[in-house]
Structures are given as C-alpha cells and as structure tokens.
Length: 121
Image 1 (spheres, rainbow, N blue to C red):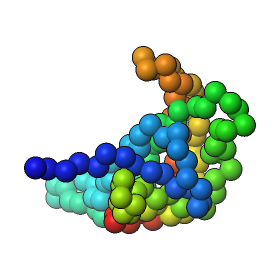
Image 2: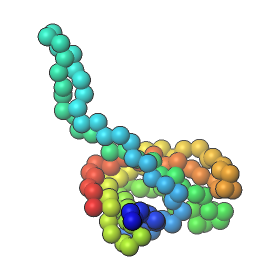
Image 3: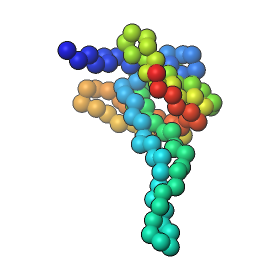
Image 4: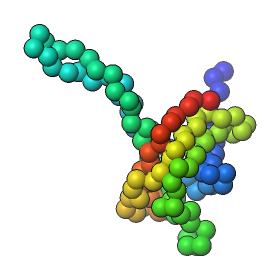
C-alpha cells in the first residue's frame, strides 16, 4: 500500500507556523531557448526559487504571523514524522496577496516568497 504525506509543518526562522493551508512552488526553469543565426540553441539559467504559501488568517489579529518581516529567513517543510522534505534558505517575502474566502469558512491570504537556495530532504 502506498503511503502519502498526511501533514506538512512549516517552520520559518525556527518558529512553527500552524496556519498554513498549502505550499505551491513555482516551476523551476533551468534552460531557455535562444535564437541564433543558424537556428536555435539553449542557454543555462539559474532557476527562480519562488513559492506561494496559502495562509489561513486567525480570527485574533494578535495570533497572525508577520510575513512582511521575513528577510534572509529559512523555511523548512516537514512530514508528519518530522523528516525534512524541503529547505528554502535566504527567504524573503515578495508579496502579501489579497484576502480570499473559501467554502470551508476560511479566510486565506497568498504569501509570495523567494529563496536563494533550495534543498530537497
């Protein structure tokens, strides 16, 4: 039987953020097509390490995590057994999106972030 990751914990700068609904990584582009006089070729590029967190806003404003303050942070994604799945370092917040409301009665904000380095577990 195949086992799946049931719970994902998010740790930002040593502090666990419990109100995360999900994490979506942007595609990583490693090569781009470049045109030349004889046709085309490929150029190697450094991938952008951007990702978006879906953050559920707690009703109490005092319990909300301040994502605007993150500069040169570390984001760790752990499975339900505490094993590290991914680590993003050099993390900074690029954008705090607008509020959306779900059918599950949740108020969600998308937090766009960027990292300088990404490592898989």
